[in-house]
Image 1 (cartoon, rainbow, N blue to C red):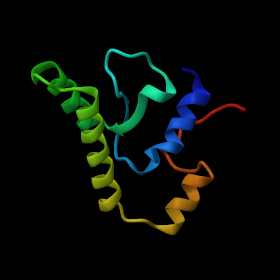
Image 2: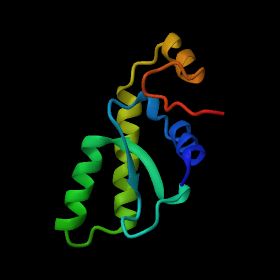
Image 3: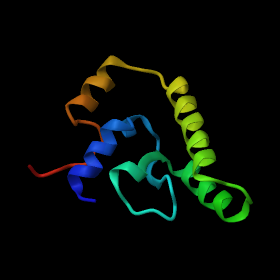
Image 4: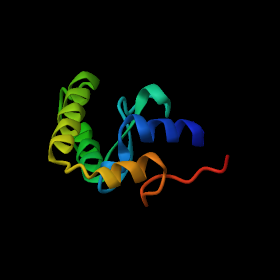
Length: 101
């Protein structure tokens, strides 16, 4: 993956609205690719890593379902401020990665 791929994921997953964004591989045995990565909260990523090592039957499908539930929960909890949305769209938030174009 390169910087452009990470930036694409950043906007696709609305990482600017996460408190501590972290890259998660959906299939932990898979490669780092656009189709296998997503931004989620760091704490959720740590919990997923621990669960995948300790729980029997933790399939990629179940992991995806869990990730989606976390994403929906975070989205529902988010308070949307038009100014913050505008700044994020223009790349003026502290969480948006800087890219030299």
